[in-house]
Image 1 (cartoon, one colour):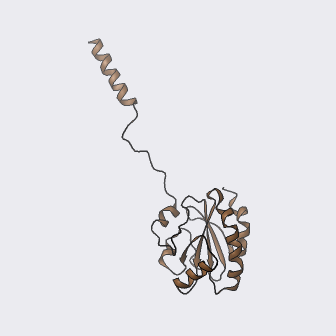
Image 2: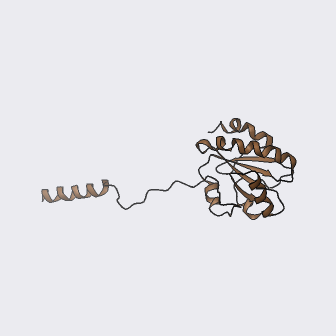
Image 3: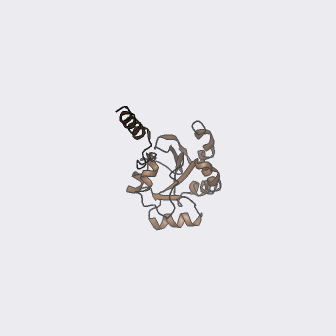
Length: 167
């Protein structure tokens, strides 16, 4: 009887302490941007990196002279901004047509994703600005869509300063 009790105790202990073979590992929660970008139809095949720590919305258009002056600077610094999943850039095009937006992107060889500012796609982007009164204008948000910085697009040059606090 004592042997039988010890055998049952050993089996029960083995069952309760053995790791579950079929239990799935809990998935890491997706960032708000990762969830949104799966639902958005961007203007090009390019999609923003869902693992970025920050997203910079650049409100711009070809017909805007200051936009044409600042865009090459943003493009030149884009790879440095993306380094180590830090900041991803998304163009919010203020062109009148999709064709115009694509032409603007092609002219400057913009390497980032884009949506039309006046579209339902923009409203799905976490933290995307609702009322932009003038361009060029940037809004920087964290991965959950919380605003970190807003201002004239020339302030993009300070991206290290306003993201270093939490990165």
